[in-house]
Image (cartoon, rainbow, N blue to C red):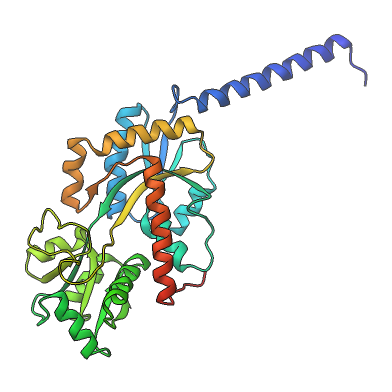
Length: 330
């Protein structure tokens, strides 16, 4: 079939015009002055109600207010947040699918899993560290163990009886760091969640646990567990009488965190816009007042600063896992 020159010219121009429209739309979507033009999805690798979910909802609502578009929280639990992290790693890098990445998924999993379907450095760009979770070492309130020194002595004298509960690889590695620094032999007993891990101490099933302040602070205040130390550089504001690990004789400084990530190829202008908004949001008094009662210390650092934290933690936990011969086949 033959076409006239006029028809060919018309269809060629039409095709060029259509391509120009597509290119213009793509440029508009990448323009930080126009982004966002539709709903943003924040993916959380845990069930609703946990610390990472709550921080996503608190920050997400304020981000929606600032950007003028809905922010939808998508919970995709499974595999220690591997399911959610892999999903975002392969999502379009357009600023509309983001990840609440906890240090467990982003810094600990690479240290302990022999194979992961994502790379936290190559597949993601860190936007801002939203908050940190101070960790507290506790024992049963009726336990004769009243200090970190007592716990170390008990573990060395009773290696077959000394154990600890752990709800994830992150808490396992923090306790492994404690063991490596102090020489205290303690056997891990895994549990499904942080609350179960703390209840194991209360019921006397395990000797001790290291947990974040969220599930443990109420039990400390209620007198059901005894706090021995905080695994941080400074004492916790809510528990000024509890010494740091270093003050208690164990050189352990381990803080878990949660932050927001975007797929690696997200346009720099969009990354910068999200970074700027998040740094401002997390430091707003209203947000600080909502996070602190949950045991979350607001951070709100820059993308570059967060990237340094991530790289440092991956290196640190890889060394701890290697020294403890901790590996998970995937």
